[in-house]
Image 1: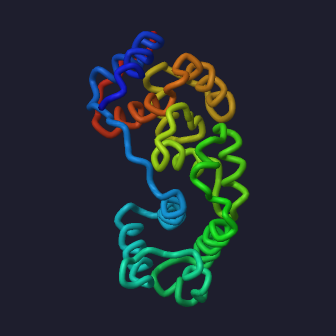
Image 2: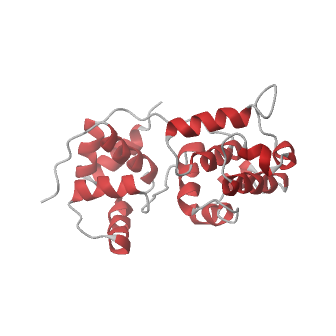
Length: 210
């Protein structure tokens, strides 16, 4: 079921964003994912193409027969050479082990993490080597489908908001303007971001603000 209440709120609070939503495709809620697995996949995908990431992930899964699930203890038992043989860099191999070790310590408990605020969640995950603020935010938005996350540092959100609102600032000044604009979207900032990303993907024509 679509979140009609969220769409109505965003449209009423921000008519420009409402135009993007009206011109776009429906974005249904997502089922929650395995956070540990989503973290591993996020690291594998960093700074490489989608196609390359999919190929490396498939080879990585082949290290864990028969189901292909990378149980934390099995990841920790692999050597760096074994991980590099499937296409991972030395750095990423270390990051995957750090995530597995974090999970083994019980620090990726779903119930606990979903109860945290956006900032507390980000601080918790960025304590893992290799996990940055952007990755933590993407996991909240997509793996956990939490409703009120805003990624002012994401290039796609920045580009869409520049176009929609005619923003000319750059750097921290741009991010501050974005945060101010996004205040009106609470408590549905995640859905707003998803429509902004979609507007870039589908070529939706967004008239710049006057």
